[in-house]
Image (cartoon, rainbow, N blue to C red; front, side, top):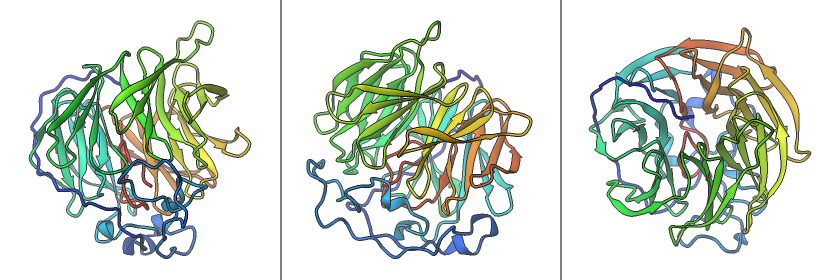
Length: 402
């Protein structure tokens, strides 16, 4: 959820051009050598696209590697050659300190902390996996990070970049301009404006794309609405309003597509659970799954079996079984906490997540629920990114890889 923090800061940056196609996948050399990142399974060989691509693909989108699992490219060891030389790091934007902290997941030690623009919200991998973009929301800029060195570059001026996504064809960046009430399509290399789309809601923030990439679902946290956007036409084609739960007005947050591409899951911080919606137009509400107070971030396990939900208001993590649609496990952070945004380690064993109101980062072993580390960082840690991760390309946010 967007917070207003006030502190001035420096801006820096160099942009890296995107490649034109998603590369094949191969094992990452840094994973097997790290005790904290030991693969759960033997690294997989390169994946070939499905012989019969899913129909109705967005033109220019890389063919899916599976017609039954949109997350099939995210298995342990299936890295793009683009990231093979990159060390695995945890990148933490501290919204209240105007800094980014980098953590070595092998040692749980902070490597460096550097200043950014005002109120950094998320660290977002570019479509081609070569650059990490820090979204300096109130600083009206993006700070790039070179993931080979971990060092920041010169800033790019971008107005109100609360969050950032990339279309599946790699041709457009999409800025979630929350205060401006806009979706801004930009050049993914230069971030020059291509098209500005006003939205009929307040607080656009999170999204995910359909299996074919032809549409994407956007959450509007302050008005309790969801938008269906036509990717190629770059326009809103449907508006949904989530129902209120008694005295609680809905506040939708993160969005994630099911492995089979049939439904979207939307975390609702005020209704304390996850909405299930059809992923085909017209999008409709199908069900609601209670998870815990302040349901916020959504992540998919490496085997595509469970949906991970961070319950920020009660300091817990829920796992929803995709097949049964029920919570099958609940992990509570010892002493409480405020798990917000993050990602799964490349081997699938550890959930890394920011503690928004506790100025820490949590490392949690998913199989046992054990808290492996509680690492002090800056104030208001938010959209933490684990990078690199398996996958051919990034759709944005803290890392949606396919």
